[in-house]
Length: 250
Ligand SMILES: C[S@@+](CC[C@H](N)C(=O)[O-])C[C@H]1O[C@@H](n2cnc3c(N)ncnc32)[C@H](O)[C@@H]1O
Image (cartoon, rainbow, N blue to C red; front, side, top):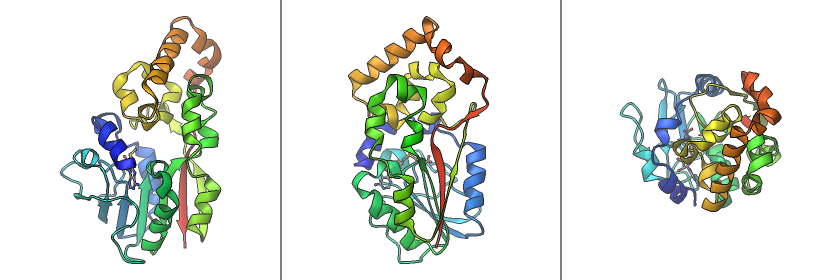
């Protein structure tokens, strides 16, 4: 279950997972003129708009405890069922969370659609694209295997119905939101236990597999193999590591 997972891995999340300003601007633009918004899998409150009425829903006590005083308190619950009537709010948002909903993913995404009169705004990963990033492709095929359960963009579109737009979100080199995608530009980050711990990609790995990945990346950085293979990435400002903005309108 996602809540237990985040009770275990959520410690210290807020320190390494700060809002990315560009992503924030795109989420807020997608919310349009909605005045009431439910944020599901709300976590520590990243990307919640300060100028609208927000209802936050979050299953993990550890994550909810990291919400700052300027955020509304989170109702403790998961995406299924949402404690709201049909069409109760103008918009629903689910940011970097639905890929943790496991068996609840379809029902949860349908819940977002049910409770929102207007846009449903989702930020998630297209696993077929993130699998191509060097970390997964060269060092951690186990992550790719785990990501196979992520909803595909076609599944999302069919669960949401209506008009669905899927847009790539390039991950900037200097993003302050250290998702696994942010590692594209920073192989050294693999050696940082706190950075690893704030990503579910690493936190889900078997500890022995994780130790192997860290040792392999450390060796390849030290002997120049990583730079020989991927050094051109050090010259890029942004990269498509599979993050997607999904905006559904009824
Ligand atoms: C990577 S965090 C993202 C938090 C926040 N939305 C953000 O952008 O920083 C994923 C969140 O999803 C929550 N989550 C996991 N399973 C869930 C479920 N079935 N329903 C709702 N939230 C869930 C976790 O507890 C965690 O807080």
